[in-house]
Image (tube, rainbow, N blue to C red):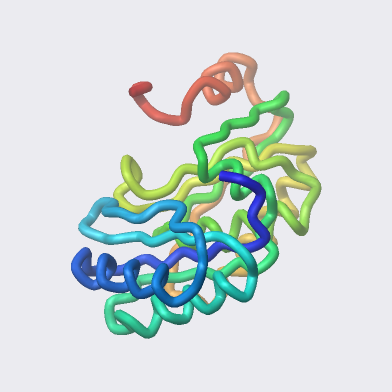
Length: 192
């Protein structure tokens, strides 16, 4: 993905509804369809990017097209560049003193929480995983000084407060050398 000023993701509880909405979204405004497809457990996700006004228009079309099937959604008009890079699978672990692991019950929630945390605290987004292999959940690891990763966790909690999603997080400080070496290679149990 190139640098994008805005992204939007809509998570549908129905594959049929999601595919219908995805078509409506790209027809409504000139956006780039970054990803669209199924994730466990039987959800359909649509991710678009582009200019802020165009993405917002596409996002609204997607919400209207299948409103009763929307599980979660997010529109990020000034998305943090590290969030966009991580959606392409970019992993950047540059030394680990401390880190916060964010885990959300939806993909849209991890985008919302990670974007806010990256903007509001002096942390680096080391990795973000979404959807498959996580039973439709989101996972992000943000690294930095202990006080900064604590601030990132608080920001993530604040931005998701009142939403119908679950956020679990843990802060790991003074990371053991052996575990740090493993995490920088993969967060999966087996590498594919």
